[in-house]
Image (cartoon, rainbow, N blue to C red; front, top):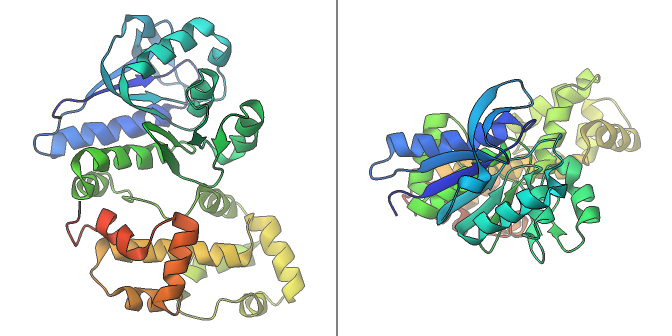
Amino acid sequence: MTEPGVVFVTFPGAQILDVTGPLEVFSTASRFLPSVSYRTRIVSADGGPVLASCGLEFATTPIGEVGGPIDTLVVAGGADTDLHANEDFLCHLRRLAGTSRRVTSVCSGAFLLAAAGLLDGRRATTHWRNCHELETEYPRVTVVADAIYVHDGNVWTSAGVTAGIDLALALVAEDHGAPAAAAVARQLVVYLRRAGGQAQFSALLAAQALDSEPVRDLLSWLPEHLDEDLSVPVLARRLNLSERQFRRVFKAQVGVTAADHVEAVRLEAACRLLETTQGAVGHIATICGFGAAETMNRTFRRRLDTTPGAHRRHFGVATGAG
């Protein structure tokens, strides 16, 4: 497979990164990897110039003029679209999906796939703010709220905005192996794969705007002290709060419990070390604060549905695993 065609479906008011993020991944793979060439095309309902939500305009082809077969169909998201009620557009979307090896969506693009019936009976995700809405409007879809992306059969859906980059890297890995995807990630200066779920990232982003300086400082301090005691009593004392006050303040301001946040940060650190070093799993478990390898193994199974060893085999650049 040297020239897979990737078709991006967009519309006026779409989020530009939903298109340009994955597009840049495929473009980078084509420019920097030998024997890799992703042909890309951007389409919309009517074709012509399309104005994204940020004000940037780009050219598109009418969706009705595009035929198959298609390797990968990517449906962008955005807040201002009524295409979920446009039966002519949905008919074209179903037609293209029927000729595609893979069907994918970024952010709220999942709503268009769901409206077309392409997510019926499948697991899927979207931006964390819209997961409940997707679940309510389309009860035949099993919504996975805390996921960066979800792969169910030949359908892939991803969370908000930058998660489209994670999704595209995963598709490159599926096509050409983890080392190839890692090379693209290094060129773009992004993670090959972010650990944990999207709730972790929405909480961290929200924390950057916290009014509470002590909580902000605590969040910045945590990653450098993962091998220390980070229990609620210890963290509460750092902020000079009672345990009850600390639990309430942390959950209210960060969006998750302190225990969940600490575990997510430890898990992300462990993933990075597994991907980029050949350190023993037991040593990584110790320096990331899990204590024992078995504890880290249980956390990987519960939160990522995998094991540290499997994660390294699939995503470890140092091992050269594909």
